[in-house]
Image (cartoon, rainbow, N blue to C red):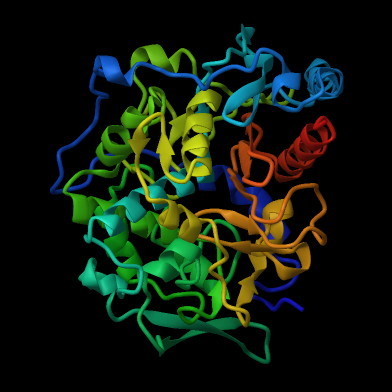
Length: 457
């Protein structure tokens, strides 16, 4: 049985619903000591947008056109009913796009129709891209997963762990104890560092994260590290899967070891070589016009989640700040499915991709209380799932509540998007939508899995 730790019973759901919007303000900026990338450089000819090849018909790659219509009908009905503003769904198999469909509105309030190149705040779907950046540096000998994080960020050498004590009168207090070992790079890549998100719970450690304003979208990655160096860990390093700011720390390591800010590294070394023109932490004026928006309830103020064009952030959040399109992200996924290469551009070796997409959680690991809130992506043994480096990993054919294959890997974002890659079926599926409600986005992830797999011939 799993061990859940970290938050008092009954506190989490209320806190999550009250602070989710704050959690989504994770975006862009330049790191001190690196060349700032406040505007996006014009792409050279080789960086023009590219699309994966199109299958002549879905049947060419083993899908039923008739059964794929069920997917179309389901999403169109929910746009018509007002349940969702719109979406872009892309399904590829054997390296070819079998299904690419836009639904509803890019901006319902403005009446702007969704387009194939609409841009989305992809939130935690940033994490796999940041992990690829780190693994690229590992392949260059500039980073090792076994190293303590202090080898790259000395400020994080002597972290302490916050232990919450509840007094007889019901009051809580925090006692600090030394970490039994240093946090490693691997800990940060698999979320066993002990770092948390201050916005997804109300433990005293999470309260301290909120007081330190760790989600400030006007901070830099360097400034974030200075804050984290003064904050306690929620768990002993290596002892618990706690979804949190670990990948943001990896983003800063990429900056330090590459000499580039994270935006520059991802644009120049990942997105541009793969033909992902619209993937970055910042948008130019033309791209802002293609930015998808969530819908507000009738009579309510417009909802702003994540990237706000009126006040571009300064934080290049390696855990949640990128913007992208369905076709861009499909090219990234195809690179991983191909073992690190796409159309002659190799970013990683096959073995590094295998390392990234294998389970890294120890058998005796416990799980922070927020883990269950990850829904069908939760890397829990009872779901037959684990967690690799930036991605969830399916380990069993059964147990999971949705269809898939052993070895498929996946993740999603708090703003609504979701993806998975199924190596066994040579299949990629991308869902781009801007729906921050946790229950709603979980429903559509399950719906998409069911409707994609039922359409296989």
